[in-house]
Length: 133
Image (cartoon, rainbow, N blue to C red):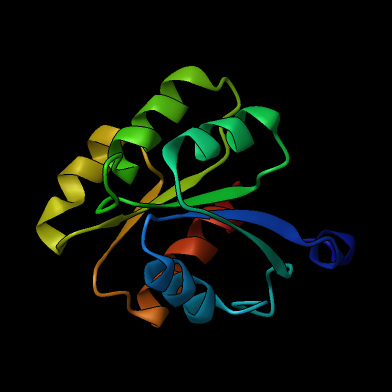
């Protein structure tokens, strides 16, 4: 990644109906999860309609969606985004348990991390997705 690429912050949408989950994600990743990545600028979203609105508007570099959110889970939203947005940004989904990884594959998310959120595992997943784009 060129130096100029690292100086422009990436916009990361974090969706969960649970404010604690959103904060866990943001605290786990921090402002710059790894030196080889740009800084991250977070947009917290609590409802599915706002996720769709923000993703449709563009300017999002990565979406982290909580599969355990209610009434609309992040896995279904991920599938909808991948089906409806032609150049959909990468998506990381948070699953209820490691055995739910098959649901993440169904949703077409680029990566999944299970609850409870492990900062190292989330950072690896996010870095892998961002470095691959």
